[in-house]
Image: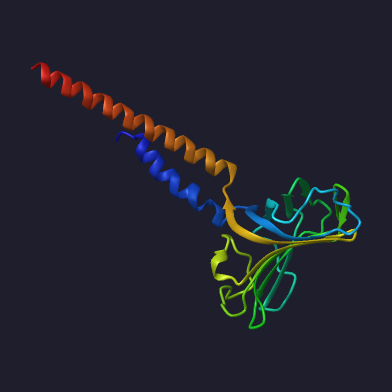
Length: 217
């Protein structure tokens, strides 16, 4: 039996696409817009302003243990948890070991919160950085387990960014939440795409030559 590039890609692509469901760690990407900046002492020196964009990633261990025994409140921490983002022109890179995820599954709260704190970002010491989605009126989360794929923002009433520290308060709205593919998965998909593209080009060339011979005959 001849093993073609199509057969190989057919076998590889489902595995590559399904990898985030079990992979450790998992990374969610996000983007949004700053709504309000409170900085009475001018600590930010103009690096963050209303209507500025923000974007970043939150990485976590999908096999982290729930530190709370309640079935309506999941609390997760781990050494692999990390948040990186840019707000305006200010970079945030948490590495203090205070990163966590909370999953809410109750009649009062139903949502997800990414948290990081006690780290320095340029001129400010961040005591609290939170990214949260919440809507108690729609029970999207039916348990308190860590999600392996991002929930759709459109069904949540609240999706907000909060940054507090050194007399500074930044509030924003999360506009998108998406899964960041593993580097290995992206490489596999790119290789398959290139192989299939070359295969189609070869087929077109063969058909073109065949048509030319038929015209000559």
